[in-house]
Amino acid sequence: MSITGTASFDSARSSAPFRVRIAGLARTTSMRALRGALPQACTLCAARCGDALVCADCAAALPYLPPACPVCALPTAGAQLCGACVAKTPPFAATVAPLVYAFPVDRLMQDLKYRGRLALADWAAAVLAAATLDFTRAVNGFVHDRIAFIRNC
Ligand SMILES: [Zn+2]
Ligand SMILES: [Zn+2]
Image 1 (cartoon, rainbow, N blue to C red):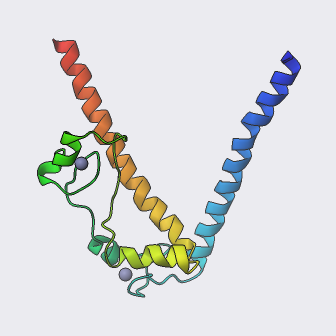
Image 2 (cartoon, rainbow, N blue to C red):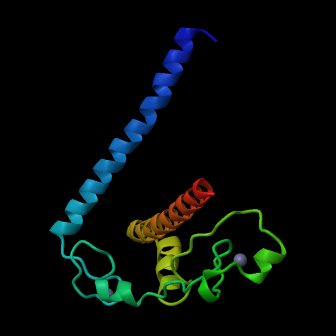
């Protein structure tokens, strides 16, 4: 492969994510503007909720996952590894599951998946992103503590 060919390949490759990011930013900005301009009703209780799809009261009442096994996300006391993961390590390292698949989360996901309520994808992505960020912070804190422990030894 020539240097010119490599350069054009690299520039085309690096500009595509930028275009995708710009398109995503424009879409997000326009969606926020539309949601801000049009009155929003909570998907669950129909109360006014600004630019959110689920009001704060309904969001607080959602069935969040209790302390769970960090590998498989099954509820455990004190968020310890569950017996199944201790007995046989699964082929994945961790699971992030912010909500229990129960009412009303199951209805929201079915509305998104089978009834074409694509706006719920933004809400679900935001909930998952927040849980992933919390998980990442916990992992970073654990790694930081382990590094500090190793350095002190
Ligand atoms: Zn509500
Ligand atoms: Zn487990």
